Length: 250
Image 1 (tube, rainbow, N blue to C red):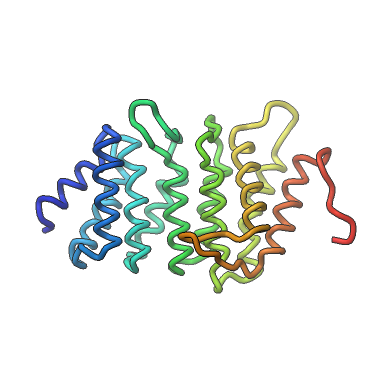
Image 2: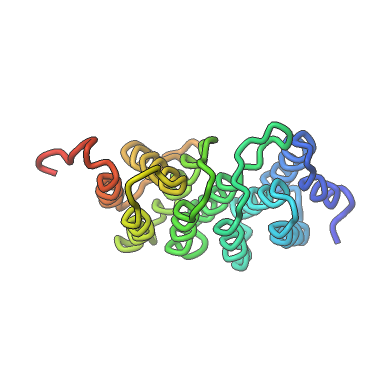
């Protein structure tokens, strides 16, 4: 059983007060993990507690759990059960608020994406499953248009998974089938929020892959970068054929 201070931090991570939850508990927990100040038994207990937290009644409590799990993954800890647990929460979560005036950061989509990006950077989990989870999140029907750079965070997570050396060509682009299906189902009229979210995510990914994606400030290499960029551009062209065309000779 962990000591009282660790259990108090985990309790505070569910606080509706952003100063307690974000600036206090989250910052302290991730520092303890990063600096190696928690023994293995405590890290294991913390991971289990975060998986349980994904079922909390309040969104802001649920959404900070993947960030702590991401910090554990980054130092080499992973229980394979974490990935399907986070995937279920990530793809089914209905509260997609970014910043709330009273609660502070909820940021469900961004925090979930950070977990999958951490798995990508650490080389853990099945890359096809990680990419599919991110794709499922961006296309799921919603009434909420992302406004707090969730699209950029998902794109960054996609890039980190795509940078893994075990990603082959089919895996690098198969996740785009979910996007093609979404766009193919469209009809004239207002753009559905999920379609807007998806378009902006793909544009962010296209830009990142055209430059140098970063992990903790250091560039990573995406082996199939041009293949992914070409297919992302082709998918985006389906929804904006009046805006641009492929350069001659490409």
